[in-house]
Image (cartoon, rainbow, N blue to C red; front, side, top):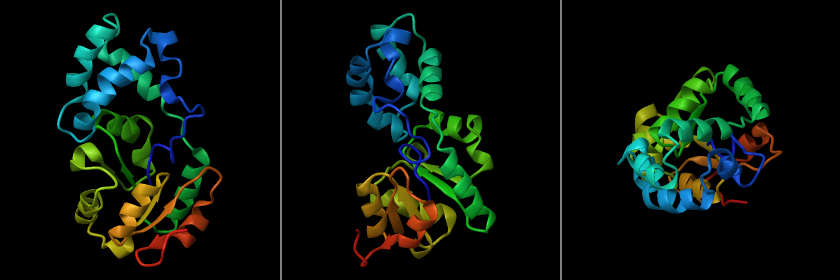
Length: 201
């Protein structure tokens, strides 16, 4: 189970896809954060509200000339810096018979963009994401729902994620897990993945 943002997709700038948002679309990133992400994102990413349903009224106030399509296209394409080296490692492992899935906190539209437009459907066996599951990492329900969907037991699952709380949540559910950092070797992480009771390093 592989995380997306911070692992498979890593923006070269810490400010991420919003780095030039005001220059390109006239929307201050801080305002979008305050008016959309802070107020609405939890509902959107957990599937309780549609992205456009919540984004459209915010854009009418912040940037009336910018449509939902405009912003979503800008967001998704500027947040698509794929870690090709990791993809090659995953392909090698998958060719050896190990299933490789995505386990990620996404809303519906970006999940479909990742799966279809970025071609992850050709590289992974399945996509598991927060809006579809109705819960997100590091809640135990996220990991348990994936077990139900896949039929794998907790002892058969390994999570690679860049956030320690998510790794700890997986370990608490009986998964193996490891924290991804730039420059890691996937095979070494899989070998050193921690399971509950072993202690995290």
